[in-house]
Length: 525
Image 1: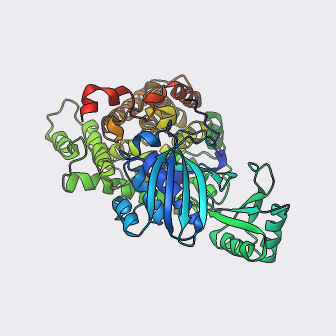
Image 2: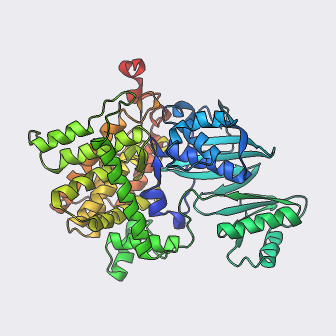
C-alpha cells in the first residue's frame, strides 16, 4: 500500500495540543482520540443532534483492522453525540447512541480521496434531515485532518476554528464573505481562498467562534451559499510563533539569541502560538502533569481491574522496587512501574495525557514520577522539563509524524523516549546540544521499530515497549551527561525515522496482520 504523508503546517504545531496532549480517555490517541475528534467535527458541522451516521473505513487502512480493539467505534460514537473526550460515560457511548436513536454503522469501502492509512468518511443525517459527507484522517497523537466536506476539498488541520462557505452558481465566495464580515464589523475574521477548491466557489474563514457563528447565520439569511463551522480539536491556535522548532539549527539560533534553555524556548513558542501569557501556558502544562500523576495514582492505589490479556502489574513492580531486591535498583524499576500504571489506566479507558501518543503515554510521566521521588524535585522543575520535552516532540511532529500506522512504533515509543531523554539532560545540567544528542540516540535505537498490536489491542507489546522506552530515556540521558556524543544531528535522524518507517511493510504498521500479532499464541488469545 502506498502511503504519502502530507506536509504539516509548521507554524501551527502546538506543544500543548499536539505533543504533550491531548488530555483524553484511552487506549489510543490515533484510534480513540482521533476518532472522537472526527466524529465531533461531523456533529459540529451539522450543528444539531444526529439520527444516523455511516462510518466508512478504507479496507487497506489501519481503522479497518483495529477499530474495535482500540475503541475507535466508541470514540466515533462519543464525538457524534457531542460528548467531552473525558466524559465519565465515554466508554458507554455506543449504548447511549442506540438509546438516543442514533444509528451508527461501520463499513469498509475504498476511500480514494485520502492518502492516509487512517482515512475515514462519515455520511450523517441530523434530526432536521440535514445531510453531511465528511472525509478526514487521524494523523497521529490525536491530531486530525479534514480533507473534504460535502465534496468540497478543505484540508483543515483541526488547530484553528474555521468557517467553510460554499457558494452556488457564479457567486464570488471570497467577496461575499468579506462583504458580510465588514457589514457585521467582524474585525477578527480573516478570509482565505480555499486553495484546494479549483472552482473558487469556497473559502475558509478564520476568527473567534462568536464571530464565525455570526457570519454563518448571516450567510444563511442573505446569500445563496452554505456555511459550515469546522471545529478545533482542543486549544485554539490563534497566533504565530516567531520561534521555529523545525531544525537543530533554528532551535540553537533561537536559544543563542536570547540565552534560553529548551524549556524557555518551549514556553515562549507556545505563548506566542496560543496568544497567551507564558504563565498561562505554564498553568496548562501544570494541568497535564496533574493528569499524568492522577493516571499513575489510579492504577497504583485503585482497584486492580483485569485487562483483555494482561493482569495489572504496576503495583507489584512498584512494591518490588521498594523492597530493594531487584537487580536494577534506584529509578529504573520505579519509573517502569509508574509507566505501566499509566498504560493500565489508559487501556481501561481512564483519563491520560498523550505524550506524545496514548500508546506511549507512560514513558514521560513514569520517568518524571520516579525522578521526583528519587531527587525530590519540585513540580515547577518537572513542568519545565515537560516544555523541554515538548520542543523535541514538536520537531518530530513538524518533520515526521507520531502515527505508528505511517511510521511504526519509533514514532510513538521512540519519540517519547527521545523527548524524555532530552528533558532529563536539561534537568541534569546539560546544554541544548547534549539534550538533542540524547534524543537522537533514542531515535537511532528505535529506528524501524514495527507496530504489531496483538488482536488490535493496546496491551501487547505496547505496555512492554513503554518499559523499554523508560530504560532508553534514562540510559541515553546518563550516557550523554557522562560524555557520550551522538554525532548524527537530531533533525537528520528524525528524517531517517520517517523514511525507514514508511519502508516498513503495511502488515507491520498497526494492522495486527504481522509481527507479534501473527504468532500462534496471539491468534489463540
